[in-house]
Image (tube, rainbow, N blue to C red; front, side, top):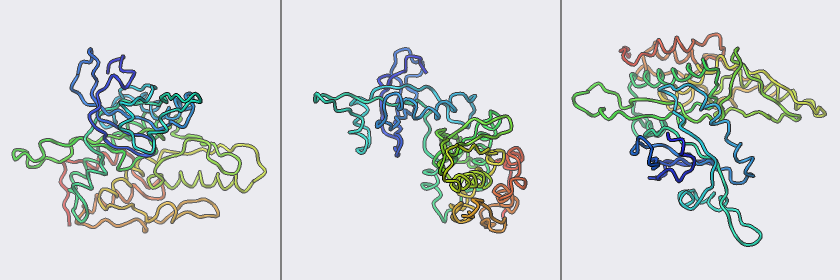
Length: 359
């Protein structure tokens, strides 16, 4: 990416890829004359932080690129190209959802207007999210091939292992945050055994955090039980020991209403990557989570502890996965982190080239 690409004016917008409450992604190409790949497509993310002052707006999404940009490149982690803080003008505003178009303009007292500034990220462009892919290609009761399950688990798992080795916790793994590159040869008669997905990558580092050498982090709980640190994203994919540690600390602060001090609670993330990968695999295979209404349904309201017996984990029918594969997934989401396999063991087990005998 050219070092001169520090404005959205360096890019030509083709279409909107998608939008949510906090931002929008567009398909773009770089039109700087010196750019070496003028036809290469990128994803330009526009952050919705228009209600903040310029200083606060520039820092509102700092976590997303601070954690993402410092990680060494990996084939299964979305490549971060560059970021910049710039004005929203009409060339971008016309693509914004209606609910943020007006807030991207400041109306001054003299009746004039000026554009607000916001954070932009330029990222590697992939075809589709895993969530969207599964809805299009494998809507229930269609069964996803076990080789494809193994490939997705293997590739996402290798990304999580890379993050763990760099002491980064993603904390928001979910189907919508896994992007896929489709395989153009899938329907080629000369490649009858090819899979529809060529590559999976982990994206969206908005709630990621850097861990200590022991894979732990400290979260700050304010008076009254308010969490002051950046919290994790998707609650369903967070391991029970993390929920329990945070829940216990929140209740402790709430039970001391006169305290004015913060409480720092140590969170151990060593068992988190395998758990979140296991939950993701359950969603791929069954279209549901391993524990019904988790974590709310298994939370002790008096202690904040989250717990369940392994017998409560959803069973995977033998026409979906082999007995061995199903057993591995159930161990990955065990409530007891000591019973979960290591990421290395999971990657060794889920070989997309290996054939498993289904019942």
